[in-house]
Image 1 (spheres, rainbow, N blue to C red):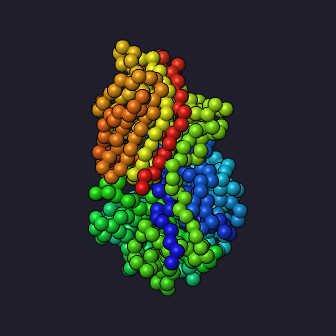
Image 2: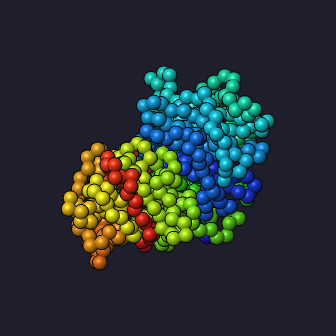
Image 3: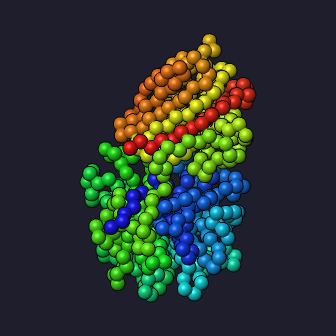
Length: 520
Ligand code: 6LW
């Protein structure tokens, strides 16, 4: 039986939501404080996903400034109705609470509209279009009486499609099947006249699970599907390659099948660094409701192809070396900055090729927009090389390569100078506000190749001037979500900082190329 490889989108791509228009599938994932935000992907076979654009692609749409890396854009739902695409999403602002907004587009590649703020409490918004064209908004919020109901509450209101405002009464739908933490990620579906409310419970970590309730009317009352949880890996041991499975969204195919996209992680010895990834899971509808992975009851690394698809290759991550020479006028969609555009700081050198990084006084530890671009680490075993030319004016200026989990947890391999003006490459690890200088080597030239090699045990950092020198290694769990907290996986990229000096503005680094090579 022909198969495909899961995950279908590797690296930090959590909270997948999916919709279909004719033969075309569209998928959106969370992007937190990275910019552009809410990547949209397209597929014809559910397996091969290609980037199409972003819902948040103009800084005027949303301000992410000041946010922790794991705040920002959470868990969007994408739907299509009568020629319009809708994306509803939470803007999480830490202690300042959250806002829910809606963007629309005629073309999912964009442009997307300015956000319309909805008067909605909680997170994980979703939309359901009923047969009569009415639109129902759902989200999850804290329950008013958690001692009676459990802590989370799924609620619904109608969305007026003319005014794009919530209208009518609030319907309390359900408090989950497990009465534990975090009943979230609600989506409503209708099958054979029955409304199904599918949610995630147990939190987005080890206990994550898919649960369900059903009702004869869209606004409820919903009764718990006693088979819940319908999908989870929380009972599976350490040998299981995929954990944290949950947060599903379902889609029907033109061939009459139903598939779910789910988030999951691939841990190694109890920690994961790549973030929550997108897994594709077969679903069978029965009179009792959906059955996930009917043959095996679990999400697998190798799964049968969707019907009607003869061959399909997962392209959600490169399967060979990728060399970026930055010869075009814009960066590819896989490159992200933090909290806003960096066009004035990081720009392709048109004609010549390569990239100019103008040093910014904003450090990587800031919650602003540093001179930084990075792409997701999508392979545990990975080789990254970049050729960079930079002459620092002072030891406070530095440009180079970063392995970035978040603003409080990252490593830098930077080209700088020592007090006597000799070029040096410095390896620094930063955790919770403290910087540890791990190694420094003098280099013969101000143009070097910086390298990081990642595998199960850690990240090894090296530099090449006339020959290779290894500066040191940092154990892999240092960059894990378990150690750093939050919701994101590792990004690897380039930066330039000139901490607190006037010369910072003048400094410029030139990146000739950047190579990302998965290792078997
Ligand atoms: C997402 C929610 C979650 O909104 O994490 O814990 C949030 N669960 O479903 C961010 O990915």
